[in-house]
Length: 226
Ligand code: DC
Image 1: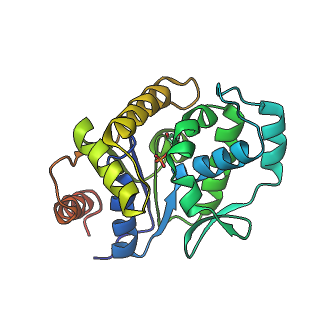
Image 2: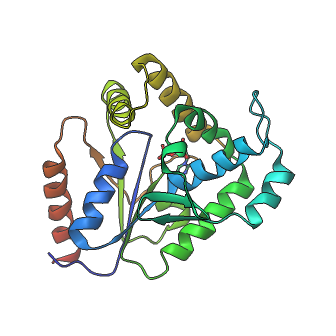
């Protein structure tokens, strides 16, 4: 199936399967996959390693804004890189997950990430996942999907994902983290998690990847006639 040069924006809460779906879409249509959450996680790691966020989540915004000027986050063979260093494993830890929402609520951080994403997406043929891709980063994206799944399914998925990476977690902690992040991500002032008016909802609680792909292909045929 050949599809036109479009941007596919996938938004939704944490662990609704956005990134797994986006990666498969990228492979199927030879699109570039961009994980916007990884950039927020990278900024969080930078903040933690440089003492820019405290135990009480107080953020040194002026110092962080300064640090962003020389920050090089990009995607490579093994995932996310900060300069030469592969940070893929570090940014998936529960410690980073516990600090990422307050960092992602800082307007200067959002501006920085948005600019990076727009640079990456300027030639289109990208699939991007996040919280505000269809509303703020690419409001003109040709295809917007808003993903949901029930809470229990989401927590189990995230726990399985972390365990597969050798990270020892218990389900209760993962659930708590998801709840906290949902709350902060949906209630922050700048670009909160919201469904774009023209987004199509996909509840994948009980769907296989194959079923999701079939759903998407039908949608593409309907929308673009290809
Ligand atoms: O998708 P994720 O769980 O890796 O995202 C990590 C955090 O980054 C998430 O808690 C909220 C934030 N985020 C955001 O605010 N906007 C985005 N477009 C993507 C992620």
